[in-house]
Length: 176
Length: 224
Image (cartoon, rainbow over all chains, first blue to last red; front, side, top):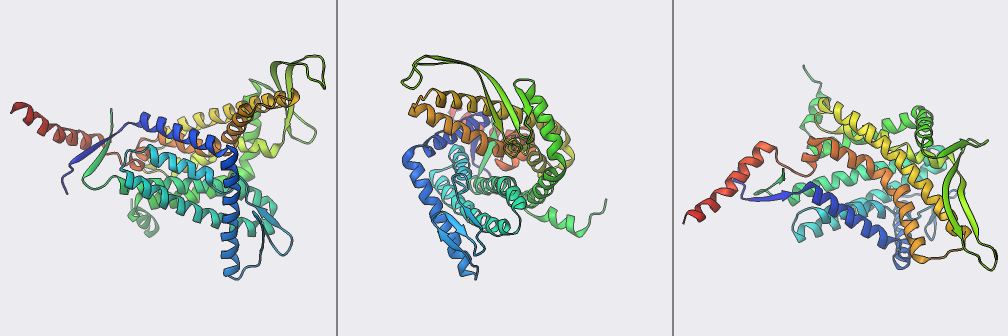
């Protein structure tokens, strides 16, 4: 077993406080008019990517701004809250609040965001098909199941990142 | 006790993968159980608990009608030349919106049951169930208060940008963030082993050895 040389203290209360501050700041900024405009554009980009993937795999759908429409008339719109920005903010807040190097934080923010958005596009496409089958199941999956799964995935992404951020030769312990 | 190949395979996985697989399966199972079986009893209990603080009645369509005591004086405006006094605000909350204040509990159960060392999860399960239930009631009450204050500002035609922004952020947090993150935060607070694994925290014995090792060079330096 390699000798551990560096010890970093994790202050749980300090982490919780920093996480809350980052999250509140980010959610506050999210609701300012310029960022809201960017948020809408971002949703459109995500729908465009989902549309490209869907048609590329042989599916049939039409895109209208942030709405993905099926030939049968069903349409699903990516609104504020559906673009996983809320989950991204939670991940960013956790990564920024954790005692790690700047490079590791940058890696966590970039890789974590990419994975969360990839999962969110998968969620959007699955909801597009589910809504054509049953609106009851769509409501359940849209509001509760997929959203909870996405938060669970985000927690695991953070957990995996922590394993890399706390390198061999570095140990973390909670201050008593 | 001998374990089957499936269980042996699960134990061989990384803790993160094991937690993700178990958590996802439990989330799907428990949320489906909640949607089809537990939803109505939970709504009944939620209405009863929140009803201890604010008046809630059923409407003919099964929605919830809130009566929130709120004292405000609306100043005179060109449309209403006389100042008006408000003592309470009544509004309806659809059943589908009230549902959002009950689903945190099955999510919490899924996280705790997916956490390592499930045999020692009974205490966090019970404690967390009480905490998450209390958070759900508190969120519903805060939501009712926010909605009532929003209605007052609309009646009065008060268009303050900061107030509107604050209410939007608050409502977003209450409806779209806190019910989802709440169970995870409570699980991390009540389940010590899960918290230690996620944050990569060493067990107390190893960390004390490590701190002793860290202290040694400093002690030598003091002597010289």
